Length: 204
Ligand SMILES: *[C@@H]1O[C@H](CO)[C@@H](O)[C@H](O)[C@H]1NC(C)=O
Image (cartoon, rainbow, N blue to C red; front, side):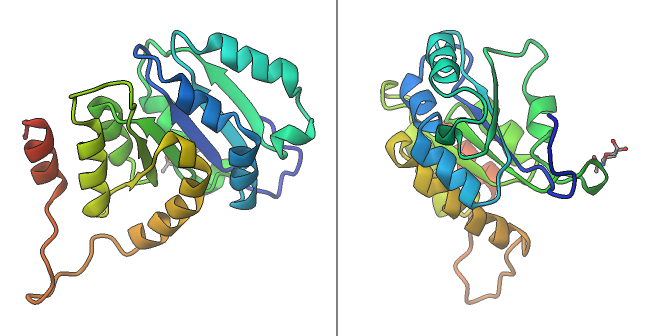
């Protein structure tokens, strides 16, 4: 990841559509000019996509149609991979701020798989959760909405992903004053463990 302007910090958006279940509509949405423009407007420099086992053709078609430097990329450097045997932890950490490495805090956009959500939440960078509408009866939308209601994530439909960029920036601002101060009169927010236990039937 080379940046031409050494003074501009890099800012990475990492997207995982999941390694196995196809979520090609999310992949198409994040390779769309409208989304890339939204990233650029919020100061992003890089987009890295885990496109999964079925996404390679879509990703490669994008690279052919919009070669590096073409206007459709809105100045964003784009990379992708199908899956990472070592897990996504290392890649996700690249979205965290590190001043000595010239990085400001980015964001993660994830399908609503519980493993990826938990991994991303640990990093305290803004997380956008996108349920896969093709997966029925697995509570993905419920989980995403509940986590959003409690203030942990932005829940988004894949069609609306370009609007989620600004919402993620707003979430970042709120996270700087994390955790919320709770007076006796304030409505108590459920903890992350309580939400996950209720929605997914597990706790630690
Ligand atoms: C930031 O990057 C430096 C240099 O690579 C590394 O030594 C340090 O551990 C990183 N800081 C954090 C908080 O990860």
